[in-house]
Length: 198
Image (cartoon, rainbow, N blue to C red; front, side, top):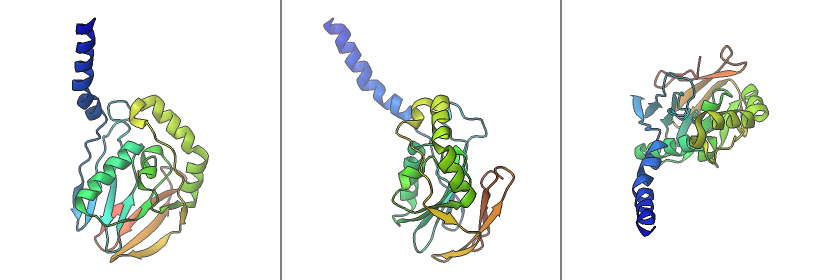
């Protein structure tokens, strides 16, 4: 019995890094323009192996702080995204933008609070009405990748138009096609377009 317990303790001790690694999204911030980075997700459907990481998300480092565009499919994703951002800058998160209400684009929001989170009116409504359901469905599909994840509704309704943030001129373009309310973010300063899932 003592040998069995000793073996069990050793298994638990040595397997912890394996279990931890299993929930690592392997995010790598790829520079696409000056102070502009992209995380590229899998070209797959949601499943346990990818943990729901089928999203392209990104961030822009401005003079006023960091603008985050889409936060991924879980609290874990958001936290790992934030850790990658911190490898590039210690500037505060100025604003988080959700391009639409599908779960891989907003379920990482809670990792970025208390930063303001912004989305178009239709996206705010969609997250408010369906966010919990999306989270529950992803729990079923991806399991413990979703542990601790809660739907956080954006607290700012974004208006289409142009906003200057820390030396970057961002144009918010309201479209539809993928959902009833899709946002494209065009950085006129660098020429980079964040198109969500359009």
